[in-house]
Image 1: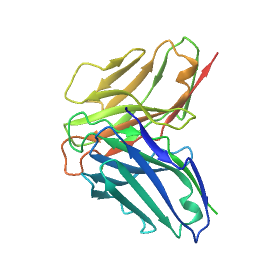
Image 2 (image 1 turned 60 degrees about the vertical axis):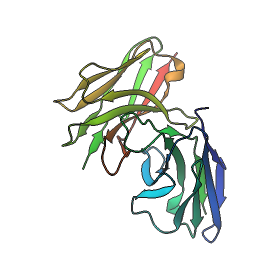
Image 3 (image 1 turned 180 degrees about the vertical axis):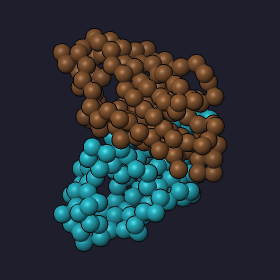
Image 4 (image 1 turned 90 degrees about the vertical axis):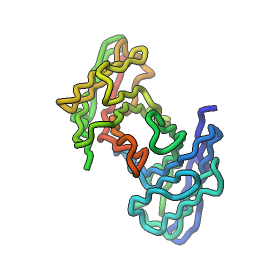
Length: 115
Length: 117
C-alpha cells in the first residue's frame, strides 16, 4: 500500500469556523508533511513531523495548528482562517527525514475555500 | 537559500513526439537530490524521476529521462513518445541531503505540458 489518503476532498468554511483536515498513511513512514498549494503555483511547505514530533514549522500563522496523534495520522486544525487561506492542502509522507532516498508520497489534497 | 527555476510556463507536444522541460537550480551544497514530480488535473503529485547529485549517470525511467549537468546546475526532463496521460503540471524539485532540516523539498514554478492527439 503506497497510498496517502486525505479527508475531506473539499471543505468550505466561514472565517469563524473551526475545522480539521485529516491525513493517513499505512506505509510505516515516520515523517509526515503539510503543504499549501495556491492555484497555478508550486506547493509550499508548512510543517514537518518526524517520529510524531514537530521538526519544521515554516513560520505558519497560528490559525493553522498541526497535530500528529500517532505515526499514521496527521491532522491540520483550522481556526479563524482568512479568505487568502483558500488553497489546496497537500499531505505527504516519507520513510524518514534525512535518508538518502526518502521519497515523499503525496495525498490527493483537500480543496479548502474560506468564505 | 536554494532556488529552483523552470523557465517554461507551458509546453505543447504532439502525441508520440518528444518534449524537453528545463530546470535550473541554485545551491552551494555538494550533496543533494533532484526530482521531477507530475501533478495531473486530478491533483495527486507523483514522483516521475529522481537524480542523486553524486551520480554522473543520468537517470531514466521508461519514457522519462533527465539531462543532469551539475556544473551548470541544470536538470532537464525529456519525455519520449508522449502519451495523452502525460498531460499534467510538472514540477522540478530540489532536496538537501543529510541536513538537520531533513527532507525538505524546494519546488520550481512548474511547467504545464499539453499533449495534442
